[in-house]
Image 1 (cartoon, rainbow, N blue to C red):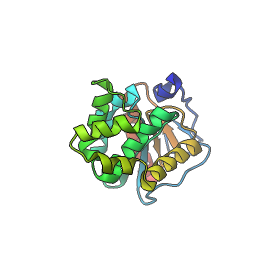
Image 2: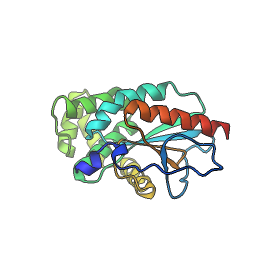
Image 3: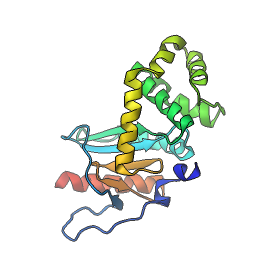
Length: 201
């Protein structure tokens, strides 16, 4: 489990850029470029999990960064998991997204897990928590198992596997560049630099 939770820089080896490339930010170039959700924008994907301690620490930082991005940058988050507990949390994330509750409860999930010590790893525990947040437990329980939510979870796992992502949090720019940095601040600085270079291409 721990190898899944390590900060991305512990595993990522930096690859030298081709001499003809204008890109200069530290990153690992993936084996191929993957399709973007919006081909007309510069895409940044955050792979994360509610269960990850580093993702919890990174959450307010990456949200503040995303809020500052100009209109030509598309930021999206993919909650991924490698076991049943993390997969349950992934379904929680996508259920909140589908229900329209994500903006209201996203930070609350992190707090429940990392500050309150809640174990939201089963549908029963998730529904109980959701009801305590003022939601309809029966409807949310149905949503957790719905085609829409399960499809989103499966799609996120497919993207994770196709990109070879094995740790969180991980940032990928343009479906091709897995970013690195020794601190969260350095990671985002490098991401900003790469976005600026991509914009000039």
